[in-house]
Amino acid sequence: MQLQSSFSFFMPTRVLHGQNIIQDEQSRLGEMGTRCLIVTGASSAKASGAFQDLTSALENLGIRYELFDQVEPNPSLENVAQGGDAARRFEPDFIAAIGGGSPLDAAKAIAVLAVNDIPPQQLYDGHFANTPLPIAAVPTTAGTGSEVTPYSVLTITDQETKKGFGGPDLFPKLAFLDPRYCQSLPFQVSVDTAVDALSHLVEGYLSARANDASDMLAERGMALWGTCLPALQIGEGALDTAVRDRLLVASALGGMTISHTGTAYVHSLGYPLTFYHDIPHGQANGLLLPGFLRHAESVNPDRVAAILRHLDHRSTKSLGDTLASLFPRRVQLSQDELDSYVEKTLPTKNVTHSPGTVTREVLINTLAENFSRP
Ligand SMILES: [Fe+2]
Image (cartoon, rainbow, N blue to C red):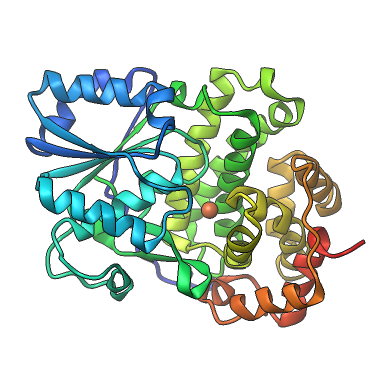
């Protein structure tokens, strides 16, 4: 029998899951220090109830805290530099991040900049003189999985795209998963972020770097996610706490999956759609997944068949139609735009990690599926 290729598995985040989990496990925060910088966006942390639960736990423990609530959607290098300044002034022992992918990813950059007075461009060097501050992450969306990944994706304005950096020290130390914090999310944001989670699971499962451990995470995540798809199709009222709970766990499993496999070309191709057309990240992925699955099917039909089984669909065509139906808004791209986004994507390592040989034509076909002119 042929030996499997070797792999390394590292998942150092303590994942604490359940309703009221911050209250039940607040003593874990006491192990992180006595000064905490809370990093959030403008409103979702408070609207979700997570901010109140966190600050009441910090107060019970006598932990001093300050709030940096200026994380923008798709945070830029300039934005995280502001957070780094705030952190160096306050000198926290740890960071608590509440929100969707933007605050969680910004918090990782701020954790580095808090103890390394470097220009934010140097985040991409990946080597830091001082170990980043530890992070406690509280997701308020079920999508990013950032609470269990070592990655941070930021917008580089002068390069007109988003780009990730990461390193093993950037895994959050704690992740508090409470589905109640997702309950106040607007319906379409819930759909967008849920499809981001699916994209992580699918891209990780089809990655050239997939291994037995990541497969276990991806398969269970897809099975859980598949049970939620009917509710996402029905609409707002169907997203009860039980569904949101399964999506939250599926999202964390997706994060753990891509912590080991990385994402595939769907994510790289989606970044310019977000940067130039303001298409939410998960939505961009969802509209690229049908073409990606079709490409992957020609390379690895067994794996695509397993994905279809988990999502209860008979063909990549019907699954593609279902995903597209979740996103009523459409952006039509010119040929120049298609070409330009493909040029940006081709040199990325996500292309290398994708299944099979990814040519310019594969990427054009993937984009054309939902973004070309009729
Ligand atoms: Fe993503």
